[in-house]
Amino acid sequence: LTLEDFDVVVLGAGAAGMMCAIEAGKRGRSVLIVDHAKAPGEKIRISGGGRCNFTNNTARRPTSCRPIPKFCVSALRRYRPKDFIALVERYGIAFHEKTLGQLFCDGSAKQIIDMLLTEMDKAGASSCGWRPSSRTWPRPRPAFEVSCRRPGGCASLVVATGGKSIPKMGATGLGYEIAQQFGLGSSRPVRRWCP
Ligand SMILES: Cc1cc2nc3c(=O)[nH]c(=O)nc-3n(C[C@H](O)[C@H](O)[C@H](O)COP(=O)(O)OP(=O)(O)OC[C@H]3O[C@@H](n4cnc5c(N)ncnc54)[C@H](O)[C@@H]3O)c2cc1C
Image (cartoon, rainbow, N blue to C red; front, side, top):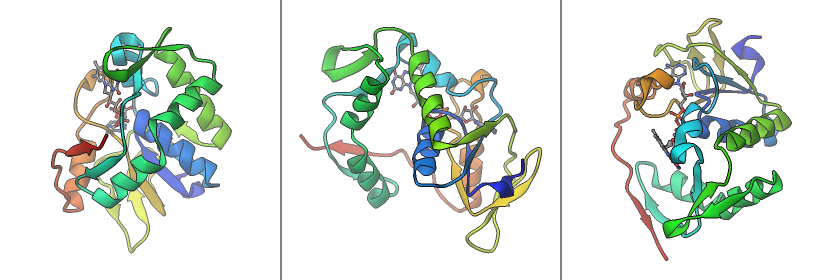
């Protein structure tokens, strides 16, 4: 197994990385997720007090979203809360609504992790427990090189290593370091939802 065997390499097996792997796999890409945590989706496991507040029934179409407004608005408009609810329903995961439209599993957040892992399998995405370093840099476009246990290049790289909260679950500042290498700032996103 080398990075070169895959069309897309995703750094980080959290909610964002797994969803990305699923969607890329559905589009016929071979995908590898690289993560150093002992299990995927560790933050999902503790989210919502262990029941995962997986979406919100009252979220409306976004009208603006920084720092990449066009991409964010278009992505959020094309994958809506109702799409995720439909997925959860297909897996027979029971859920309930709390205040302000928050949807929680009746059972455990682990059901959401298992659902995402199954969807990854179905989409043909693989994962491995490697630790990429911050030495991730652009090669002559469009390829990227990732330094990890088996360093290599890839045509598409997704950095989904999340924020820095809860380091004991695997959180690091790798995403921020990589953003800096590409001259990107890390401004707080601003969200505005229209009714
Ligand atoms: C206590 C708590 C409760 C929460 N409850 C909810 C909730 O109910 N509903 C909700 O919507 N949100 C909730 N959140 C927020 C939610 O968990 C996060 O927004 C979401 O999980 C972030 O997903 P992510 O994929 O961006 O990042 P993460 O879940 O942080 O995933 C990043 C992944 O990257 C990996 N990684 C990081 N650095 C490296 C590295 N250097 N090398 C290899 N791998 C690396 C990590 O191991 C991790 O697996 C909660 C958060 C916390 C802390």
